[in-house]
Amino acid sequence: MLAADHGGRLCLLDWRLDGRAERNLRRLEKRLGARAWEGSTPLLGGLARQLDEYFAGARKALEIPFETHGTEFQQRVWRALPTIPRGQTVSYRRLAAMTGNERAARAVAAANAANVLSMIIPCHRVISADGSPGGYAGGMNAKRLLLRLEGVRIR
Image (cartoon, rainbow, N blue to C red; front, side, top):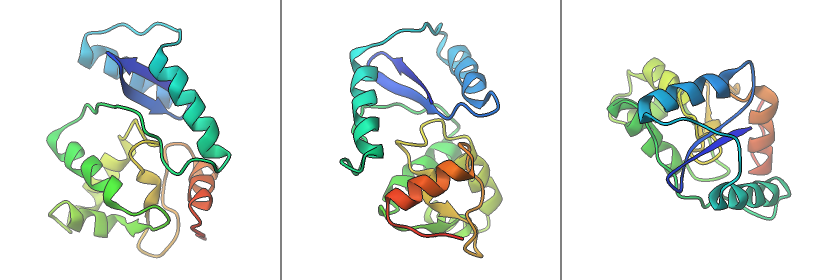
């Protein structure tokens, strides 16, 4: 994973798969007018400890200050995602309804895919209407792992 701290708030925690995280980092640099550099900060050190605890099963959620950068629609979708209880899933259509427009399932799926804080804003809890896992920026193995850590079994 690639993580970025912007003024003491996490602005990127993305899966390093097919260059995705690096592309999202460049977009954030442009949007924020900032330049990334490699190193550690107190926030990132705390994040690393929390991630270790989370994957060891000793932590149920990451508690890190964060900020999001996206369109108003994306922000609305991202605000709805944490309301999905741990250990439960919803369909893209249900998530669309939660954001006020059940016909916007495809747009919700695109906003879900644009989430660069997927371990903080739990987009892995969204699955296809037929119960199949759907997509995930970190790949299907990561999605299945995150759901399994929450006690969810999917096809």
